[in-house]
Each structure stands twice: as C-alpha cells, then as structure tokens.
Amino acid sequence: MVAGPTSVGPGKDRLRLWIRLLRASRTIEAELRERLKKEFDTTLPRFDVMAALYRSPEGMLMSDLSRFLLVSNGNVTGIVDRLVSEGLVTRARRNGDRRTSMVRLTEEGSKSFAAMAAAHEGWVGELLGTVSEDDARRLTGMLKSFRSNWEGRE
Amino acid sequence: MVAGPTSVGPGKDRLRLWIRLLRASRTIEAELRERLKKEFDTTLPRFDVMAALYRSPEGMLMSDLSRFLLVSNGNVTGIVDRLVSEGLVTRARRNGDRRTSMVRLTEEGSKSFAAMAAAHEGWVGELLGTVSEDDARRLTGMLKSFRSNWEGRE
DNA sequence: GACAATTATTTCAAGCTTAAAGTTTTATAA
DNA sequence: TTATAAAACTTTAAGCTTGAAATAATTGTC
Image (cartoon, rainbow over all chains, first blue to last red; front, side, top):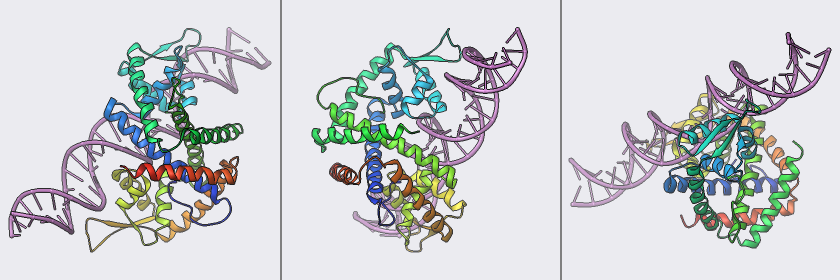
C-alpha cells in the first residue's frame, strides 16, 4: 500500500493521493509512537483510548470506544485491560444494563493524559511544521468532506 | 490519535489536520484490508510486499523492503516467510554477499499480484471518488512537499 | 411468562508490529 | 593476520489487530 502505481491511466491521481496519504500518516505515526514510548513509556493505542475518555468525563462504553477509534471490539478489550491494570482507567458495571460497563479515566489517568496531550500537540505542530496553517485548514476541509461523504454510505 | 483536539489555541490547525489525516487513512485502510481478505484471501502487508517486488523484477533485499515499506526488519522477515511458504516469492542467497538474500516474486506471485493490483486501483478510485481529480493532484502535491521536507532532517 | 433475536462484551487463533538482542558474514585497521 | 566494528538478517517477547466464536444480559413477540 506504500508502493507507487504499477501502471498509468485514468484514476491514477487518486491512487497516487492514497499512497501519499498513507506514507505521510505512517511516517508521522511512527515518530509519535516512538516519542510516546521514549518520553512517557506508553503506546499509541493507549494514548488514543485515553484521549477519547478525556473528552468524555462521564465515561464511554466499550462499544463507543470501538466505534470512535475505528478498531474492533476485542481490540479495545485488551487495551482497556492494560490501562486498568496500570490504574489509569476504571471499568464500572452499570445497574441499568449489566451487559455494558462504563469506562472512565481515573484521577491519575486524567493527569497523566493532560501531560501527554500537551507534548503530543507540540510534536504534531513540529512534524507538520512545513505545512502552513492555511494549507492545513484547506487540507482538513478536503479530508473532512471526503470522510463524511464516504462514510455516509456504509 | 483519532480523537479531536483537547483544547483551543495556536497550532490547533495542524493537530486537526493530523487527526483528519489519520482518520481518513485508517478508514480507507480498513476497507481495503477487508476487501483484500474477502476477494483475494490475503492481507495488506502481503499486498504491500508484493507491490514493492512487482516494481523491482530484479528483486529486493530484505533491508530494501524494510526501508521502502517503512516497517521494521523483523516484520519483513515474517511476512516474506509466509509469502515464501505460499509460493508467491522466493528468497535467493547471493554469492557476492552471503549475509543478504534477494527476494523476488515467483511467476505465480506476479500473476496473482497483477490481478489484485487492478482491483485495488479500482477500489481506491471508488473510495476516493468524492475527491475531484484536481483536488487529488493538489493534495498529493502538499503531502509530497511535506514528506520530503520533513524526512530530510532525520 | 417462554423463547427467539438482538446487543454488549470477552475470548480465541492467527497474523502484524516493534525494539532489542543474537547470528552470521563482510569490512576495517592495527 | 587478527581482532574489532559494521552490516544484513533472524529471533524473541510483548503488545496490537482482526474476524469469528462464545457468553451473558436484554428486548421483542407470541
């Protein structure tokens, strides 16, 4: 998926775009993963889960997390397991519906995330530093419209 | 990494861009992975390796593959192992430098990839269908310049 | 109220991924 | 030479990831 087009013809521009998109996100992702590991001894998936929870102080269901993060249910189970064992989040069985459990950041998890988020934002600013703020907004707009259009039909 | 910014202020536009970029590539990647599985009973990493080899009929070293695909050495070892056991690629020890081995697509691997690549290009065209060819070229240009700038300094 | 279907989650097997440590081969240099 | 370092790979341990199967609880529907 990181290789270039294997032929020429119509539709090539979108294929090229996809390849660039993927290479860019993989490059940035790798760098962020490495820094999270080095600076905070954590991983990107853990960071993602904590970021989602940070925005929802009331908590999220496992299925909410799975949908929001675009990963499978089973995947979330494992990551949350580890975060629980590290004391960063809690899983509280609900009275209303005993199938579900509400996942929340602990006090420690919240503090920990706030520190990571600040560093993270700085890193992204640095790594995307060659993109002007103006281009950033334009690009974001294009990607946003793509997403809402395409996801609407699945 | 898929969550939105957790505060407002300067540098937010780049963070937003990064989040969009990541969500877009994850969404498309998931769809392509699913189709490769369903239609060709293979995986994205296998497809990536085969795509790289398809462009290099003379073959590639393990380290070439690793560098080109932006993944670790050990990772490539495992994927190539599986492709070899499926008869899609060969690993040939070289006389010149016996540490290295040249990886090539087999006849079967080449045929197999050609079929997948055609379908793959169609899928990408479809999934990015809402991006105009013109926007696609513009976006590609922005991403290209970002990449070359940033990678130059590591 | 039974009971089938649905929903939320976990478990499982297989494969992907990384960083770090280990192996073998080649290059360097005293 | 003969160490010593460097390079190309592989192996390993831990964790991430998926899709599918299994559990458990809830919601129709009769």
